[in-house]
Structures are given as C-alpha cells and as structure tokens.
Image 1: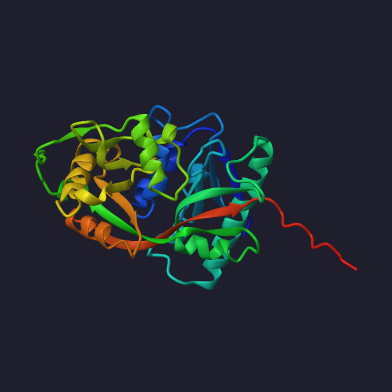
Image 2 (image 1 turned 180 degrees about the vertical axis):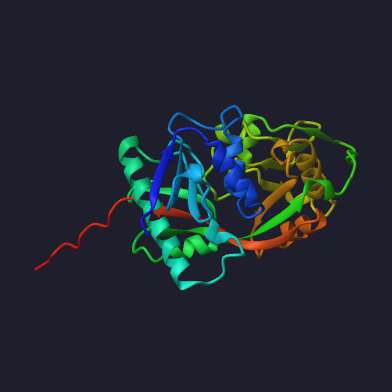
Length: 309
C-alpha cells in the first residue's frame, strides 16, 4: 500500500475529530494537540504529521499521526496510531500496513530534523524523546535496527480516570499547611525528583498545585502535563500516609485540568512497581489499561565500523 504523508504547522481540525472518535486510546495525542492553544503550548517549530493511504480530509480509518517539536526541552513527540485501538487485533496484512506507516513516520521525522537544523536536546547520537508511547508502536520501532534507545524509567501502565467520578475530599489541611502554586524555585525541586527530562522553565507554565508549609516550603505537588495527564505527583517523606497526595491530585484534576472539560477523561502513566501511586490512582477511580514508555528515537545513522587491520 502506498502511504500519503502530510505535515502541518498548525493543528488540523479534521485530525482532532478523528482522534476524538478514537477515545480513550488516542487521549495522549489529542490532549497534546489541544494543549497548543494554551500560552507556551507550542512553538513555531512544531509540526503535526499524518500518514495514511489517503489524505486527512478523507477521514481514513487506518492512520498514524504525531505531534513533534524539536525545540522543546522535554518530551518532543507524541504518537497515535489506530493500531493501538483494541478493535485492531493481530492481522498479518494490517500489521504490515502499520509497520510501513511507522517507517514513513520515522523517515519524515528525520527529514524534518534536517530542516530544523539546530542542535537537539540529545546528541551523540542525535535523538528525540517520545513520550507515553504505546507498547504496540514501540514494538514496531524496535524492529528498525538502531532506532530505539530505552530509558531507565522503564515501562508504565496507562491509568484512565473520569473527572465526574473523582472523590470529593475537601480543602482542609493539617495545621501549618496551605494550598499554593509552584514557583520557578519550586519547579527546580520538582525537576530534581524525576528522571524524565524537564526544565523548571517548562514546568512553571503547566497547571499545578502544591501544599506548602507556612515558610512556603513545598511538601506535596502535582501538575497537569502537556498531554493532559497527571504528572510528578510527589509527597515528601515526612508527610506521607496522611492522604495529602490523593487530596491534592483530586483537587488539581477537578479544578485545573480544563482539557478534560468536554470528554471528562483523565490519564496518568504509573510504574507497575510504584505501589503508592497505583493505590492513589485506584482511590481516584482509575483503572490501568495499556502499557507505555518513554524512549529516545535515534535520528542519526549508525557509524560504519572502522576496518582495523
């Protein structure tokens, strides 16, 4: 099958409509596209890529799409393919179509990288960070020799929640604590607690909520990421086992996650070994669905081996 690859410098409404019809499986890419409407939500370097047998305007049933921004200091690419939807079980002929589409996507990213021309966040080899990548797409990428670099963060479960099912836990806090927002200095602390590359300057613009001591020291925090997911929920050790993280997460998602206003869907990527975060998501009404990961997609070609004689 001959694929047709399109690149856009703004978000096509037709793609938003296609992704909306694929919910909840298309949620990460849909939210990333919606986030472009927020201040600091996109840049002049951002591109939307669409690959299918026909143009986007024909609203095809089989496609692969991505949002890409080389200039970002954190996650630079989000992908959705209709392969991810459970209705698409194993089919040898269809799987070959998706493999071709993902190969086209990699080729387009490499082409756009050459156009971008500036230094990337990751060099030697040149690579970009793909976020919350579905395991089915990762499996295809791993068949392309030398293209995938794993990250130490490992695998995550994608937890799904509904805004109207979040528990109402109230705003009361223990004496000496108060609600607040994350300052730039607070975001430096937040960045130090995660191995996903993010900068304080990036995080400070995200919807966030903190619990602070009277001296303004943050002890609990959480943010809504650029893909609309619950990220970086953390409670400092001396204040754990008081339900503070759960209370903050429920308040944050109810009051500041405006992207979920229409469809009511909320997501979080949680490590299968993170017992406390899993328990919190369960308490928020969430359930795990599919497996994701953050990977680096290597864009430079591997060097030819040196012939030593």
